[in-house]
Length: 86
Length: 234
Picture (cartoon, rainbow over the protein chains, first blue to last red):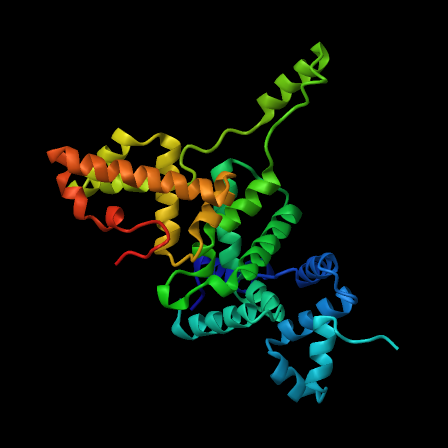
């Protein structure tokens, strides 16, 4: 059976890219980096990027460290700004 | 909202409360549409239509604002974060829209003409935009005698501004805001102490009216009057 024009439009609307919520997470990362910098963070962009990656993956620190095999202390130090640059 | 979505929201808010800023990205990605609606509501209330770029920035600011006070959000109260922190979102939008002003020093004839033109360009608020707490009470009062009595008492003993502050304060307190005076103060550009004073003064006047006037005696036992500022009512 051929779908009616209204039904076809309705089905297409759900598939159309404009109907999907597409958050600008890079902008949020930049805004967060600016906030961290204002708070005196030594590496604001690094910390914001790391948090952005975790956020996009939907993972807390423990899950992220388990996935990547990175020491949780390193992730915490990078995000909190307590790491020392060599 | 489905229960698994709500559980996810509670988890994200808990992450933010624990100062894990990765939660901001999750809140933005997974619940950004709700923030978009809240920001759009506030913009409509003020009769402003920003560019899509500015709008996206406002949504991010709203997420950051709500994320910043996540530790105060209480999931057991049932209000969604974007509803609970409505005044914070209003603050973000108001700061973006700004306040129309012009320097008095430059008040030459030319400047006056420019001011007139700019005032004429300010869009008028849509008649059906945002409903204030007072308007909600007024509508409820049409079908509820106690609310009608409370509305009459409020109009009798408080000014329009004090009524707005008192109702906004009570709304925030009922939503579980641990410091409603701070939230309402930010929205009305007042110090928290001033908000507390206005609330106390208005409630004192209402209690006095309920004690003096037999017509308002019924209000004396209302939780709205018996709860002191800063305490939660049943």
